[in-house]
Amino acid sequence: MTRLVVVGSINMDLVTVAPRFPAPGETLLGERFVSVHGGKGGNQAVAAARLGAEVHMVGAVGDDAFGQPLCDALVAEGVDVKHVARIENFSSGTASITVSGGENQIVVVPGANARITPAQVSDARRVMACADAVLVQMEIPIETVEATLRLGHELHVPVILNPAPAQRLPTDWLQLTRYITPNQHELAILLGAEASEDFRSLMRRSPCPVVLTRGAEGAWFREGGEPQHQEGFHVEAVDSTGAGDTFNAALAVFLHEGLPIAVRKACAAAALSVTRLGARGGMPHPAEVDALLA
Ligand code: ADP
Image 1 (cartoon, rainbow, N blue to C red):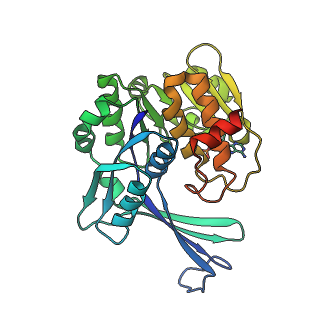
Image 2 (image 1 turned 180 degrees about the vertical axis):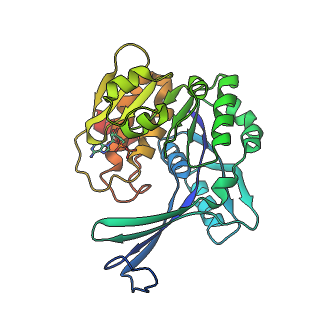
């Protein structure tokens, strides 16, 4: 069984559907409300667990009404939450999303995610030392991302950095990273390059191997030499929320089979995820991935 550590954010997404967006100072009657478990870290942990991995989450929730349900949902998917801290007098991460006429307005409050410390990463050293791979994204403090990259490098455990939301990172951090998994826009920001630069040229300039996602077109990957293309799988797209998270999780789960196979399986898993509503709702089980690949 593949063993993974995911270091990242856990959020409650609060989604209101409204007839229009309220003006400043206005109170409006909404049409519908749903709360959905999210955060890139939590989503990637769930996707990996569903694909059959043993997953250990390093993260944090608040001591508000959302903290326990957020953890319970991870546990229900089989994710180990021993390294998820409960921060006192702090809110859990939230995304307040108003949807109207196909557009949305989002306010994200990192809450407890902003309190995930490098010390928590050190505390997870024992599980990390036995892991096949580590996944980390950038919705958490940047010093905690750095601590994860450094510890993974020290322990010779491959770290996959999903650089979202993107910011420029020092070259020496990237040199510690086994793979980065940006889209084109994120890769340009990460390298401090022009947004208009061709993605293949950006990939050649990266100081570490790149797996670049291209939506329905699939993904490109480069470990040296020329960038290689993996076609996307043709599916009926319903909701692309969580496609990137499923992609990253599958890449980590199947990495031990070699990069080309892992990227192919990641494209298949992510394609399946867009056929169903919601970030976690669409995350597939291994049999579904095998069926699409057959
Ligand atoms: P992000 O939202 O992070 O930019 P992408 O939109 O590139 O991520 O999606 C990640 C991966 O999900 C893609 O590389 C692809 O494999 C898969 N994917 C996304 N949208 C589709 C789609 N419409 N059809 C098939 N696969 C898709």
